[in-house]
Image 1 (cartoon, rainbow, N blue to C red):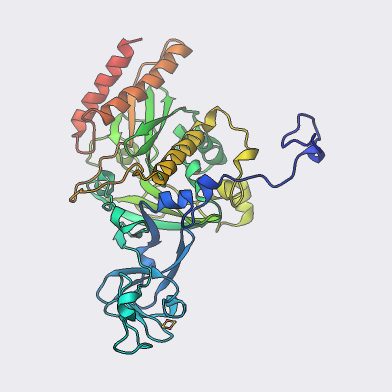
Image 2: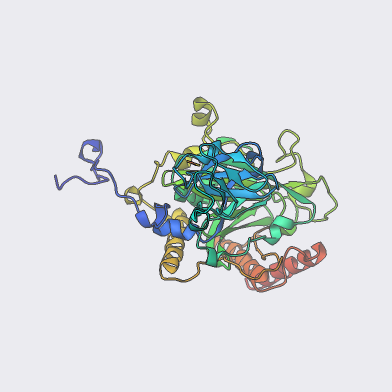
Length: 463
Ligand code: FES
Ligand SMILES: [Fe+2]
């Protein structure tokens, strides 16, 4: 049987294909307690539910990182996140009674505070020390932007809850969504590191994307202080359009709104949102989107698509971007076949996709880099180091991020080599401006444009 290969070189060779189950990569895909990737996730604040799913009337059962938990809001307004099964004899606390402080079990009335301490244990005598001895498993939880986040790692290593500057842009509120994707978390996150799919899966399938997305971009992936930058540059007539997303390792991604590249704009962060991938278990994940919602203010003077044409991305009068179509499996099968979305692409790779069967090419650079970076962070945790992107002692300070859309007029190169130089220099010069320079969220619009025009002069002069 040694002639069997996973991919044969001969035509009509299905028979000779090795059909034994491919191996999966346990380091990157296993997320339960004690598993390498599970331990990495347990060092971060991760979203586990939408705020609207949490009630003070009934507890909500949640499954995350392979653990079964119960989430509720007690009558004093605090969030509780406890092990699902009662410390007395294991009944599920989803049937519990929510109290002023914490929750009590439906079966024999054990009453737990939100930190897991036992307030009452009616099954035991008043002298019993059970209340000091036993704690129900509990995790800290916090709300932000319409979502509930949990920290499921070692208490002594709990980082500050991260509030990124782009969460708190002027005039912006958030709209949160949650979708179930029946596949491993890695497949979903890799989808956001794959610029080529935007052209084929989205733009060419007639989804409502601007024509900029039909252009094959120059792509780059660079280190960011929080993880990775996903960078694409596109020539659109006399303009160059730079789109820089930022991946906050391991699981979050700031995704910019889509520009039509019809007007000049620099460091424009409107129209996007942050998405988060959270493993339910090895073969199921939650995909959260925290989309920016705007007031219809056209006075910013940025001249981006958001100033000129709010009508394109706004669906059904909702003032937010990123079409959600294709982000879940609720659409009719035939419609999904005609116009597949991210959900269809990622979930049909299999519950846990095997990398053994892949044939990676140049456009998969982001996927390879992401896997390598995740592996590095997993190994840091394994050896007792802190992984990237944890913050302590923030004292309310926002974390600086660097994702943006920039569109500027740049004369075309006289030949292919010059054009390639311009596209590459454009992004790398802006990368310097946003990492080491002054270009950031609170830079006034006039200064942004001035800095932008200086960058263009510099790169054109070097031709
Ligand atoms: S099983 Fe919960 S109180 Fe007995
Ligand atoms: Fe996509």
